[in-house]
Length: 462
RNA sequence: UCCUCCUUAGCUCAGUUGGUUAGAGCAUCUGACUGUUAAUCAGAGGGUCCUAGGUUCAAGUCCUAGAGGGGGAGCCA
Image (cartoon, rainbow, N blue to C red; front, side, top):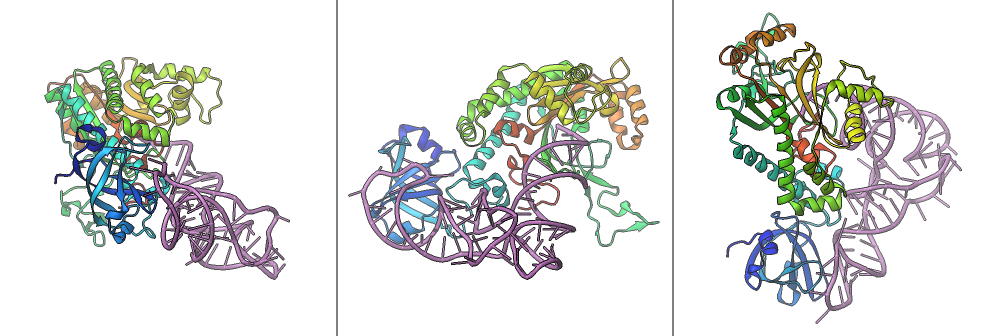
C-alpha cells in the first residue's frame, strides 16, 4: 500500500473512512491498559497524527517497544477523532516497528529542550518540532527565491566557490590546497605554489559578486545562490564560517532600482512564508516568539525608510543618546547606532545609502561629491545588516584609480576591469545573507539554529 | 579576538555567611487506570557538583589556570 504523508492525512479529508498507510517517528505514547494513543510525525508538517491502538489486538512486546523516537509503520483507518485536540486520527489495524529507540539513552524527550542543548545533538535535532519548522521554512525560502527571480526573468548563475582573487575584500579566506601540510614544498623559504593543484594560491570564495557582474553585463539580470566562506574568528549569534548568500546583479539598474528590488524581494519572501508556511510560523510564534507573525505582517505592509548616511549621522547626533562609540561623519556605524535608527527612531526597516567612500568597497559607484559612494545597507530590527549592496562603478578610469589607491593587485582582477573597458554599463546588485533572512522569518535569535549543521570557529561537528 | 555571565541527575534548574547523608520538576523504570492531549495517580532507581591545582579542621560553595556554552562588542551577510 502506498504511503500517505501525514500532511495529506490531516489536511485532505477526502480520505476519511479509507484505510491508509503512514510511516513516521513517535513523539509520545500515552493511554491506559486498554487503549494507547501514539503521536506520530513524519516531517511533512509540524502536526502529529494520532494513532489509536486497541491494545487487545496487539502484541504487548511490540507496543512496549513503541517509545518516543521509535520509527513505525501503521496501517489503519482514517477517521474523525472521537477526542478533542485533533480533527482526524487513525484506528490502527497493523503496526510494524522499523526501528526502536531505547528510552534510557534516546536524548530527545517529549518535553521541550533548550536550543543550546539541541545544538549539541545536531544529528537528531531535525526530529524536533522546532527544527522541523526551521528546515521547512528554510526550504520554502530557498524555493521562493528561485521562483521570485525566475518570474522576473533573472538567470540563476553558478559562480565559482574556489577563487584565486583575494580582491573581493570581504575578510579572511580559507586556503584551499592539495599540498601535504606536513611537508610543504618551499623555494627560498616561501611556499612553492607552482606545485599546488592550481599552480597558485587559491581560497574559498567570500562572495560571488565579481563574477556575478560578468553575468549581469551579458544576460541583463542574474542571481547567485550558494555557499560562502569567511575565516573570520567571529563568535556571535549572527555569524557563520559557512553560510549561504543570494546575490542578484542587474545591468542598467541604478541605486534606486536596486533599493526597489531589495525591498520588493524581501517582502515577497516574507509574504511567501505567510502564505505557505503558516503552520510552522504559528508553532514558532506560540513556542518562541509571540510577536513573530505580527512582525512579519508589519514588514510586508510597510515601506522601508530610505535615508542617506549623512542624514542618519544628523539623527544620531541630535538624538542626545550616549553611545559607547562616538558618532561623527566618516565613521562606520556601529551596531548600537544601527539599532537606534531601526528599533528606536524609525521602528521599521531602514535602507541607508551614500556612505563615505573610505569605509566601503572599491567597486562602489562614486558620487559627484567626491566623498561618498552609492552603497546601500538594509538594516532590520535585532538582526542588523540583512542586505549589503551598491550601484557599481562603471567608469574604467574611476575604478582603476580606486584600485590603485587601495593597492589591489591589478593582475588579480584585470578581467573585472575589462568589463568597464568593453561595453561598460551602469549596474547594481546586492547580497542577502540567507541565514539572516531566516533569523527574521523564524524569529530565532541565534544563526546556528537556522542552518542544519553550523560551521563556526572551533566547531565543525556533524 | 575582547568584555561579561554560566557549567550540579537524561533535560531544565534550586542549593543560605564554607558545616551532617546534595534536592525539585520533567524524563526513565515498576504498578494502577476503558479515549488520552507535554495524560493522570502511587512508588523506585538515577550524581566524576566541567577539569586540574590551591586555601581550609571542613569546598557544590572561596582562589588560580584550563575546557565548553550563553549574551554583548569588533569584523560582516
